[in-house]
Length: 359
Image (cartoon, helix red, strand yellow):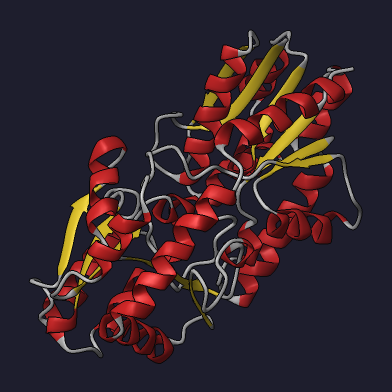
């Protein structure tokens, strides 16, 4: 089957959504399908809305012979109006891959209303959905006001490998010294890096060390704010910022860390958290978003209310002081990973859904 996929930029971009799309493409190609990737340039959100008036883009999207046309949901501002025009000229189903619902991000009220109006119109313009979590499914259904054709295909946690033994978790958790924290996510406002640092600054400096793994170029202004805050608080020796890592380099970092932290981000799924669990790391995350679909508070990690820096700091200090508790959380995290579907399981569901929609 010939399938089209419309994305912004390149599939090798290191974010959860693009990783999901890339692995899906590789799986479909391995099953004998042809996937044609159509890349558009990403600008500012409002600038991309102007794409809907581009005759060149309209002709480009009509000029294909795909049985199905997939669209990464991130691209919705460029297609919110074009989709209706495309459907009048082309009979192939349009399917959206939704990793994150933008209007549910922690934004100012007027921004949420603006994004909500655009996203609702876009979601109503497609014929079905590939969704990464039940949380995302509920968000989409609340916007379209119905239950559209959809498949929920969870990301796997097995991309970077995993621990084979619970014993490694115990020896690592009981290692003396500062609690080794790691956050994997691009340094952008939606990941909540600034409140994360502010929360840790409440703690004795000898009790923790943080590694921030992710792109330093997606939002350079925000990275400057992060560095300025670190300098102002005198935390240069406590926080390591190596930039984006993947593969063996990222797996190595996870294997030497003790806790994964992402407490101030709304996650559509939180793939990095599950990958951390594969290495026996408990997750300190937010009650907001989809982390609660696999992080059980007080069992394999901790979920805190949004923007509660004091609660976050309290939980980190608790895990530093009680290594028996930390060990139990880490071992339960590894068990959680083992129970979760692998990437291949989710992609098999996607392939079956695509075949049903192409009939």
